[in-house]
Image 1 (spheres, rainbow, N blue to C red):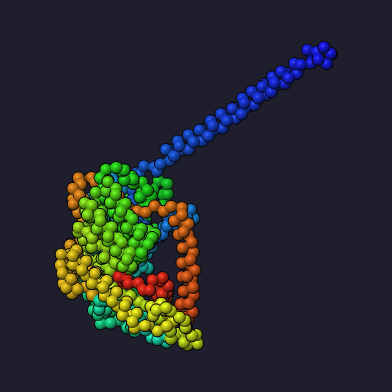
Image 2: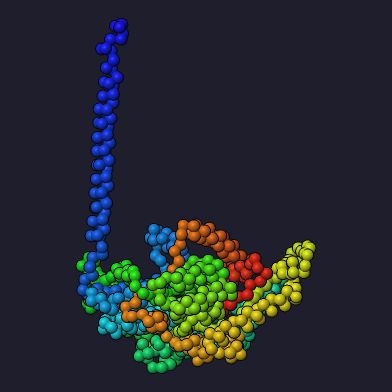
Length: 635
């Protein structure tokens, strides 16, 4: 054995392994300690956050707290727009300028039994209101609040327009700023008529309709309203105005007819009051007092309690804060499902605030397949739209009835044309006395601009294998043969409409035709003509549905609504951008047409909307679209 092979040189390897194990173990201890510390720190943070969340609930309400209902925006059945849009508004700190009816009812009903709430203060300066049926639901909740609790409702405003005043008039006390006014002017509407403008441009609307009162397309082919339109409008608006004035005069304890007399003599009365509109409102007993905002606050302090955090005002909680305190509906147990059908009706998918034939039908199917939902209330607030989209919804409701689940329709502000179509497959139809309904008629429109093309010295020509290949093209005059086809289709849909109504109402097509023809009716008039079962409220519809399903007292009410996924929100974002570009182009055109300051904003917006609708109709992929839509906006 040589010196290099001596036993003393070999133990280097075991020593190196020992060193590695030592440092490896040391690193394991360091790494483990690091992970342990980080995990402990994470658990500590979670614990602190959880503890803070549990402790950070809203402070309990104190006695003599006033519920301040400072509402802003229109009164709607369902908030329109996507969840993304509403979330972005919250992030930016912008108010959600929509008042959801169900929230108003929930807040007032809860406050009625809340011992901490002493009264309600209505501040309606930014409130845009809604149609009479929804307004009547609002004031009915105010009445329940007063009757159930004996608590007072006070209204204060810088001034009141007609919709604001309808709600304010039902308060125990109506206060107004000394520089304010109550604007009551009655119901009515003006429409734009485009016949002469289209003639100048070389454009023809080519409206084909079934129903002599079916006037949605009338502004595009006439220069003034027809006698049928004026007759129907007079009947409708007079009846609705009577509902309004009767309610206000009763609430304010005014003699019958005093509002009508006041409007007729307003010029003389205002002159006698020295031009002081607030003084006139006080003299005519439309308001109880003239108070500035600080004077109103002082009154509320004296009647209630001074706010401990802000000594300059009274103890209060705002509407939105109170709504957020209310408990979430319990999960489980039998329920009445509510499906909101609000807005115009299209064929496919639609976001909240509109009706999509497929998307709304899916909601009906979802409710039918839910074992906990024992009955459905369809809350309708729609002037109609697509025939096909309406039929998709009606068919799903029909299948749901066949499956043994009762369907009760509750008509809101408007349930006409397509809104009436989707109401037919039900066990009971309940309308408000002021609902705008009916309009059982059909029309189609095929705009052509051959005259405009000729003026531009543009010529159109080409080849088709059959006469139908190019039968309808906006650049060419209307082919009479194609117009005949469309008329046949529209007449068939009208016959189908009246047949379905007759079947649903246990009548005959001939009798239904007498009250159809595209004419609109109030809910009360519709009841008298057999088009609805009875007049009543949304709560009446809920009770009817629960009774038909044999549900015990204490049943749940759940809203069946669509959840938007990420893909839907992304598509919605792109659709919104495209729609914005189209609206921008149309707005630019109408502004150029009108000239600077030629029209006030509202007529300009009306013209923009009407031209946008016409452009949308012209861009349909189908040869033509039959439409069941009424030219009716709730006053």
